[in-house]
Length: 192
Image (tube, rainbow, N blue to C red; front, side, top):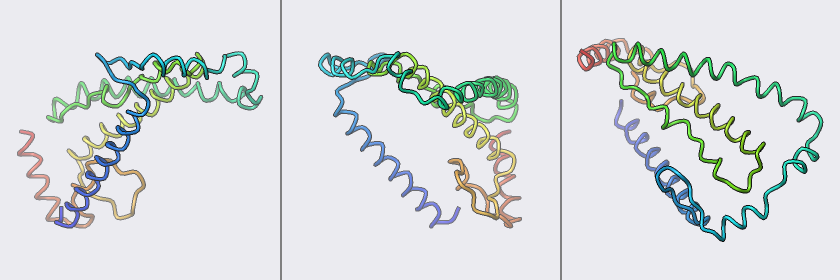
């Protein structure tokens, strides 16, 4: 990694920290805390949430017919998600120890905290559960694939890619044959 690349990566990390600090400031506005993994709101806020909750019947009555008709297509994605989750679990359990790749903690990527929001009706909570699982699972898969790529083929692509994983900046430049050979030696030494 060049000095400029390293500095840019550090700036991006600092901006991500700054963004998280801003999110934390905004969280404090809504008067909640996390106790033993459970989100707890102050009583007044909880009562406000319950007052604005849309009843399930009203929610369904206001749904456009095409939204209702496409819901089974959306929910059918649970099948490939579960299959992917199963394969990721098996893949990581078998391969990562062999290649001395640090395992990815699933819980760092998939969280179900929206169920504590009392302003959501049951269907909205189910939708949030589904989205949290799907998006968290895909982020988990990207991290597993990124660690795998870091181990086996840490070479940047010639073309710009949208949405690269966090390990990508450390990869060897495309076309740097000597750098790749050196990187292979470093990886092999680190994973003996």
